Image (tube, rainbow, N blue to C red; front, side):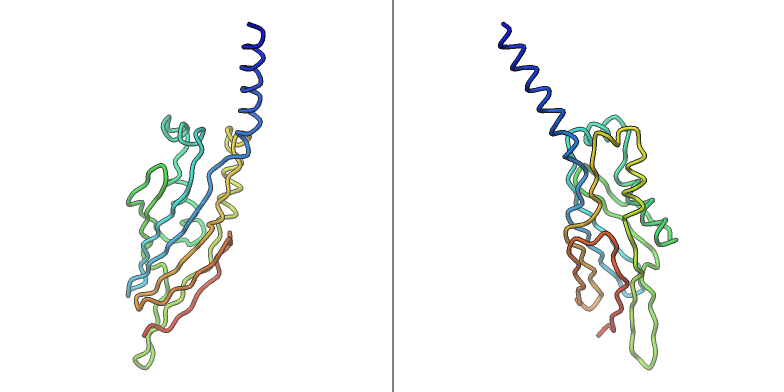
Length: 165
């Protein structure tokens, strides 16, 4: 009987010791531009059991956090199209600046960062239970002509300028 309590207690201690090391982890961020500068943004992420429970009980909303982070950085309206426990899709109007000169079209995306959003997430009451990582493992920006700019493990994405063929 004492062995059962000891085993159960050890498992609980192990569970609580390992749990804070797990958290929201951004996997990929894909930004697809259309010709007028609007962007479709897809973010893939992993959530822990605790975070999934927080979403289920409406304590946290990753789509809302993504929307707020992008709106704050870009000062542009962001529309959430879809969000679930592993991904979110948003539309950003006028994301890229489009200029035309002499029949040549150039598009420039703004620089943006998830660093502030990561700090905001650390302010929640459940922050001690999680360790969020909003740095996408891979960020890809795709222009209308198929050109792609790719960044690995950057929390702050630089501006990208491209002459569209």
